[in-house]
Image (cartoon, rainbow, N blue to C red; front, top):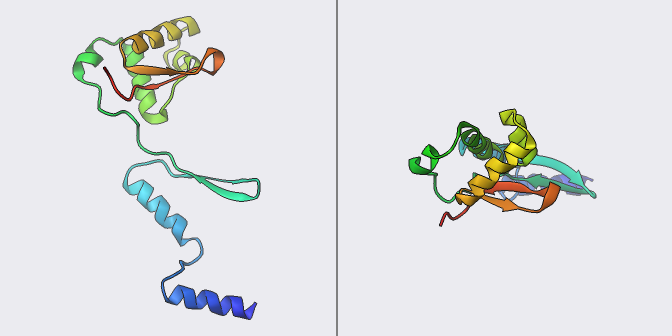
Length: 134
């Protein structure tokens, strides 16, 4: 045990190794600086897993002309997408207090306008902001 402790001290002094736990603090500091969510930490199958959530994947901001042609519910959905990166019919229904049928119709209209992209089928369907608007 003494040898391991000595080796650790040498590596720390030479700047080859960080103090235990300081890397996580630097990661969280950088994420905060760039106004990104803190990473999620988990243990999975004996491994330590860190999951990072990056910025919104929208290639370019939606212009005013597109926003002008959306109803208030659809604008609310876009605000939701800025925070969560994906939305389901149930999410849309809950944030707008409408039926799932109305939610689906509004989301499909946004797909038709090339604002959103539909991913999946049936109950596994979710929507994301379209990467490229044609």
